[in-house]
Length: 214
Image (cartoon, rainbow, N blue to C red; front, side, top):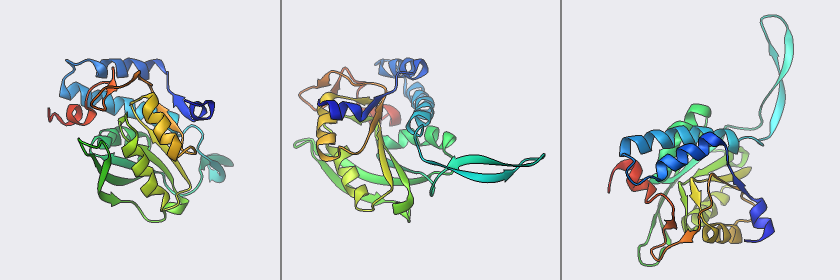
């Protein structure tokens, strides 16, 4: 990866984040426990991904006097979930960002070409004034992430950030070849991809593990 690409990758090494991710990697972690862990982990990630969001000062009146405080600037944040695995992030993120709007991007990976196929796209109105956080547990080949951001950029949101549980060098390189302006937030950059396009060592198929479908 180039130095420019690396500067756009924010590896979140907080001890709690790393601890929970390690528990999620275990192959014998139950579906119930995996769901709970991704719920807790996504709430922690929400703090990190919103750390540099723009702020504005507003006047407020406390029980004692008037003062100024700071609030997030602009319209509400949009959590854009790449279906279906991205939905595993939503509950935890919404605990930290309860007023966020939620959008959905339906993509599935063709098992032969590994290319994304779009089947659903629904976002809130007024996207040009919103900050978007794209949610997908795995940045593997990067094809789905690229396609999702392609769709989002047509709506010209104010900013886009991408959040995942695990990334790999191939996915990062592909994503930033198409979208060098979009930062990636992740707790881990793993070794690479296997012959089936899965991240190794990874944590398996996140969607199957969240929803208990395998």
